[in-house]
Image 1 (cartoon, rainbow, N blue to C red):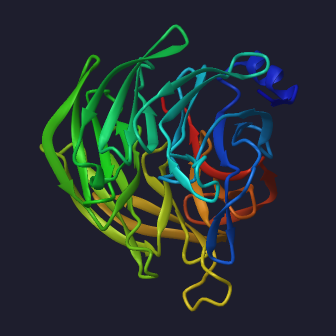
Image 2 (cartoon, rainbow, N blue to C red; image 1 turned 60 degrees about the horizontal axis):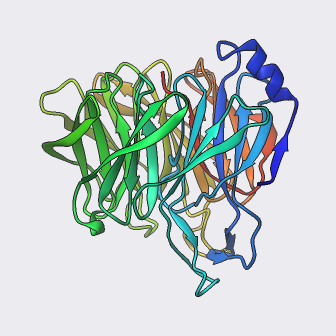
Length: 381
C-alpha cells in the first residue's frame, strides 16, 4: 500500500489533540466531471484519504493514505473517533471488473490508525451494499454505517483501536436509500436519512443494541446529509431534491420535542450536498451545488455556493452566502467556528472562508488534495 507522509504529523501528534484539529478528506480518483457528465476513468490511481490539521493557518496537509472511497452518497462517509485515534472511511461504489467504464455498489469500511507513523489502514471490514454515511458516538465505543443500496445500518464495536461487527439493522427496503446515520450527542438515539422515500428514521441505542424507535420524520425531498448540534437540541437535514434546478431545502428537527419532529424548512438553492453545524450550536454551513456540476452552456449552470444559516428560536434564518468551487461536497467548521472549509470536487481542492457570525470572507489559500474530495469530517466531541 502506497502512502504519502509529511513530517508535520509527528509535530501534530506530539503537541496532542488539544492543539491540533484533525480532519479527514476522502478523495475519489475514479469519477471525474467532464462538462456536466460524470465519467469513470480507466485504470485510475487509488482513492485516497487526506489527513489535515485545521488549527494551522492555512490548514496543513499531514499525510495521505490510500483507501477505497467514493463520491457516491452524502459527503459524510468519513469519520474520526472523538480521541482522534482512528479514521473510518466508507466506500459506496467500486469499479465493475466486468465493465470498467461503470461502478457498482461497494461495501468496504477502512480503519486508519491516525497515531501510527506514518498513518496506515489497519482494518478493512464489510458493511452493507453502498456503504455511505458513517458516524461514531461521543464515547468512542460504537460506529454506525448507513448502507444506501441495502436499506440497512451496520453496527460496529470500537475497542482497543480496532472495530468489530456487532449487527445489521434493516431500516426499510433498499429503495429507501439509507444515506447517512448520526448519533445524538447523548448516544441514546441516532437518525438515518432516507433519500429514496423522503423520511428520517429514528433509532434507539441501548449499549450495543440498536433498534428502530418507531418514528419516521417527514422532511423535504430526498433527505441526504445531516448534522446535529453539539448540545443535542437540533438536527439539520439537507434535502437534495430531484436535481432539477429548482431551489432545494434544509429542514430543522427538534430533538428536545417528544417525539422528535421537523419544526422548520428553508430554501437554500439547488442541490445542498454538504452540511455541518457550528461548535457554538447556532449556525449551519451548507455547500450548495447550484448547477455548478452542469455543462458550461446549460441554462441552469451557476457557481457553487456556501450558505450559512442561523438557528433562531427554532427557526432557520439565512445569514451569509459566498461563491465556492464546482461540484461542492463536504463542509466543516474549525474548532472555534471562525473558519469554514469546503470541498471543491472538480478543482480537487479544499477552500476556506472566514466567518465572523455575519459575513463570509474567502481565504487566500486553497489546499490541493490527491483526488476529487468528496467527504469531509472532524471529530465530534
